[in-house]
Each structure stands twice: as structure tokens, then as C-alpha cells.
Image (tube, rainbow, N blue to C red; front, side):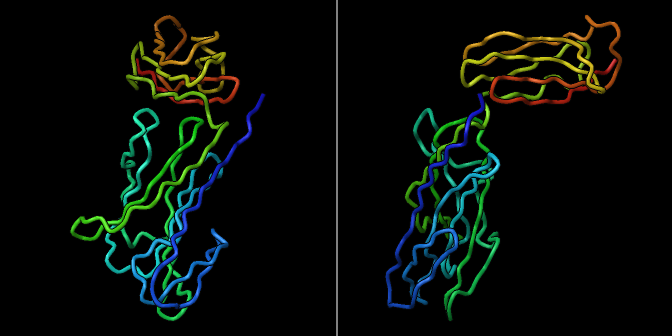
Length: 239
């Protein structure tokens, strides 16, 4: 049975202090935010949404002045500690849109994409720093939950290219009926390496091309299939 995506989104909105200067309304958050033209480096929106199995993290800054870069942090599901995300450092001029919402008030919009490997609830924080590396602010956490992405992680075979053996590794996040098969370039099945129920865990399977005398040097494919999802990867045999 297929699974449906479940999305839980928490928006963080910060009302800015200062002299009244009007309101801005962001299309990603219909609640107006009171701002002043004297407000600088002010976070107005920090949110997350999911589309096509990708989590899009969005934030908005009013009147960038001292911010040099941002860092995104993600909670480690095991340690429950926040860790800086790989490629999670974003320069202040990496915004995708800049809008003057009123005289003296400029809104900068930023996005970051995260591709989760498994179902679960994900927590994020945003930190901003000046050129000297001093932290200017840290956001509250946001969270987003999703199901139906994939219940396994499939690695690239190693070594690749190979002759005559290679190891295929994968991790199951939940118990599942697993099929692991090898195909040639035109889709003809070469071998069935796994076809059984397996418990959650990490598995290493050897593929030995010497057992198949008809195989020649070239490109082959291995496919891992569960009840939830399927993934295909390419490997190269060299003789």
C-alpha cells in the first residue's frame, strides 16, 4: 500500500521593535509584521515546506546591514543535538529575491533545499553572523514531518569499476520485503541477489561477475525494491 506525505510546518515570525514604519506581508506568511525603516538585520519569517520529497527552508531578512553569512543547523535524530548542515553556510548576497516593500525598507528572501533520506520529523535552526564571525541572532526551531519518502538508503557499489567482484551496501529503515537484482544495459535480468524479508539494519551483498560467463565489460544496473520505493544505480564491469 502506498503512503501519503504528511506535512507539519511551524512558522516562526518575529515582530520587530522600533518606531512604527508600517506593515509588510510576505506571501509565504499572510500575517503582517510591524516594521520600522530603522530596523536592520531583522528576521521576519523562518519556515519550512515540502514539495516533491524535498524540504524547502525559507527565511526573510529586513534591511541587511551587518549580516555577512547564515548557517543552517539540523537536529541529529539520535543525539538530539543541533549540527551544522553540510553546505549550510549561505552568504548574505545569496538571496533569490530582493524587494523594496516601502521607502527605506528592503526585504531579502532566502531558500535552502534539504533532501531527507527517510521518514521522520526534522528540526532546523538558523544563525546569522557578521564578518568577524560573531553571532548576531539565532532563530527559534522549526519542524517539519514527512512520510512516504523512502524506507531504505542504497549506496554506490564499491569498487566501481570492478573486476570481477563488487560490494553493494544498503540500509533498511524498517522491516521490508527486499528485492535486489542486477540487469544489463538493455534491461535483461542477470542475477537476483536478494529476495526475502529483512529486518531494519545495514546489509552488504557481493556481486561476483565471474559466475556469469556471458558477461562482458560494460555498464550494468542494480535495482533495490521494497514495498515503498525503488532505486536503480549504475555500475561498470571492466575485464
